[in-house]
Image (cartoon, rainbow, N blue to C red; front, side, top):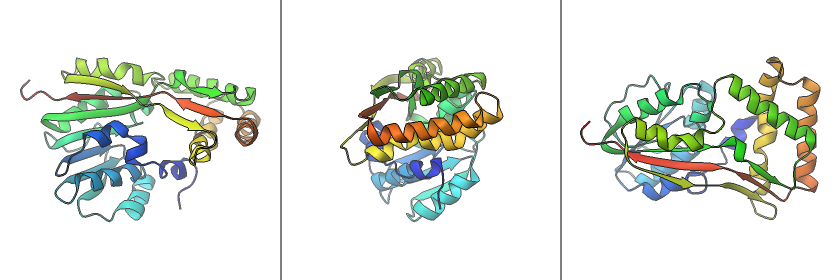
Length: 260
């Protein structure tokens, strides 16, 4: 059974959580989903391209790939494989190569993006969806214990070489790699009290606190008491006061030129 952040990942869907990609897909397309995680969105991609299409989901996590195979591995047009984004085997093979919420975790996102471009056919499309973490907003302001955790989380990410504003840099990265027809679409990830998925979407941060939070403790960014207090305070805030959460996501697409 999924635990921690895996449980949240498997609630996502193509139509709700990778909207620009959903608009681009057509029956018969071949798609590489990089960093596919639990496979929930990847399964939606396979359904969108139909029996004549082909979808491959790759991820470096054996645990997540096992979940993907168990939960979403039924369709004949869908395969899951263990692979690193920068060391996969694919060259000039897919109509669409996509990654959602992946490059934010990488110390060298440009190398990963270049590897995605290599996997696309000439005239194929690259589409990347990711966050600008500095633009996250909550109403009303969450408790101070959570704000301290969030600030430490961003500092921990920056110390590890991760880009807290990767969404704002994707278009320039794609242009620099020679992609054409580069377009950016804002996709705010919104949670509003009263919506059916409010509690599910707000569960993102308790998952982060329970998983990545232990890494922050191990690396000396916070102590265990602060981590636990952040989780408790955020859960109580969601239960009693929280009205909304807005996470800043941008979907950026570009096309691989037919000739260099």
